[in-house]
Length: 307
Image (cartoon, rainbow, N blue to C red; front, side):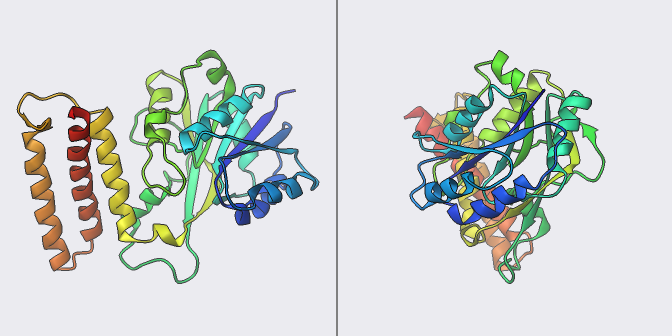
């Protein structure tokens, strides 16, 4: 009989694990499923909590420690742990799945024969913590994903699916050992940035695998206070821009210290727009500040690449 492995990478979120594991054990699925936690060198009491949860009734729970620090390394370890299974479901340790999620995963991958499927991510805030400047446009940068209530096959890259709520046929990973999370986009601990999940989505999409969005796959994503600051969004985009300049930016002839001249004009233009919007308290000022941060990050990345 086929089987499903639920994989969760965890770092210093011991307090969230009991509710998450117990929630998963309440799920129903047409095929047997088990759970593996990839402990990425947590310094809190994660191991103690996992040892207690391991003894509780329900789906089998096991856990391993990945000594290489960072989300790319942890997710690659999750892939290796899943290779003996037929299907791999991935979610994060700051989430809770809604009922029916594993059944939806199974039907998409087995009955509908898709290679990879992702679902909704609903962002949740503790009461009174959501700042006024955090408008709907910015929620996607906290991993919110909602492409509507209809199932559809993904035919272009404008509707990416993320590792906050995604499932794969593991035979694809077995047949393609190079299909792994890109460690150049690694993120350690509570550092901001990343991009490894979009790179993985792009690899599956560009190699022609069948991808789908299933609105019956829903997780609630709980946002910690340290992410509810404008500086978080600026750092996120500066890091994304820096990695763009370092790993994925074309070469140009007209440069200063390896930086294409037009990047200085872009950064100046974006900066002036940001100053103006903050001066007039424009509702989209944070988004514009993110644009400026990204432009400055690209400059930093191209400089580092050239030096």
